[in-house]
Image (cartoon, rainbow, N blue to C red; front, side, top):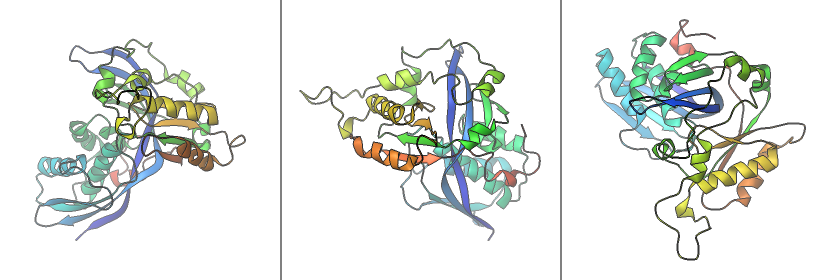
Amino acid sequence: MPSLHDLAAPAKINLFLHVTGKRHDGYHLLQSVFVLLDWHDTLHIETREDGRIIRHDLNVPLPADDLCVRAARLLQAEAGTHGGCDIHIEKSLPWGAGLGGGSSDAATVLLALNRLWGLNWSAQRLEALAVKLGADVPFFVRGRNAWVEGIGEQITPIELPPEVFDTPLALLKPPAAIPTSAIFGSPLLKRDTEHAILAAFLAAPKRFGRNDLQEPAEAWRETEPPPAGDAGSLRPEASDGRQVSQALSAMQNRFGNSRMTGSGSTVFSWVNHAQTPHPEQVLQAIEASLHGGHWVGRVCRVLPCHPLLHLIGSDAAKP
């Protein structure tokens, strides 16, 4: 049976994220730049003739009806195909990180099955389907670094300056996984940031803007209070927004800059190689100094495009 192996599902980060308003239906209006990273999950997909869709977790157990399975079922139903598949997933991207791991996995499933099932759908048709799976999935299907607006559905591929590709990024994921609903419902969330223009971002891509979700993320607390006499501490079972603050402070002190991506909880810093020639060692030292659960650090590079862009054909939108 036809199969595809070693399929990358890359992470993404938001270089900035501004909330510019709120619609009457409750959705927030955003502006952001999404970039793809060389940190990825790995999928192996094999076709089946019996129509069944089965996921195999190679290292981390996932929910039974995760986005990968939902993506395969949705494509199967919309295409009217009787084909099935076995999806093998090796997770590397942490959960609750703001890196788009689940959405990226789902997009990789769509791209691969479009080829394996012989559907040959266009990029535009796959993107229209991807919208039904979540706001980030169309970006991964499009497969290019992009200026993103609206509620995340307005995706414009862009050419990034060379400095973005030439500069490494250090990422640090705290144990905390902060509910997106809590951030967007926070009274601390600024919802009226002035609209940005692309030219201003391109003039200073590593310094432009901010993440409007960062302040409410840092302020988020679990509803369960810590034990008496422990109000100021961080317990492993009480990982919350204070860990985002810790990560931001630690990364700022070591790399001179820090920002949260998406709704968190991952924090990233641009690495000046002249000042920090061994960022991996610096990240290891930061991880060793922090407490309250499992911290994950990684040094990454921005990708020029999705590693699977070739699966979508020549009609993929170009910047």
